[in-house]
Length: 79
Image (cartoon, rainbow, N blue to C red; front, side, top):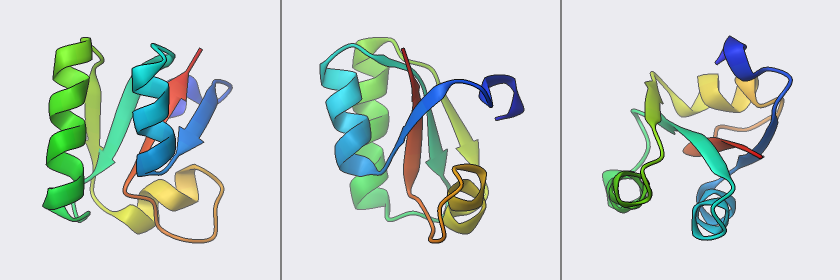
């Protein structure tokens, strides 16, 4: 995640889906401990859009990396 630390990002399922729809997502980060019912459709949307995905161990870790006080199921670096 460090390679994009200066990049703009969005956090959360709704914001990541919106960024994918608008073609702004550069890369999506998914938390391995997030609900599969939420993450699997998002991962499929990334494949269809040709956007690379990475995984992180936990929602807590991803939330901390995104500078928020709670866990995050996903985040995306955007243009």
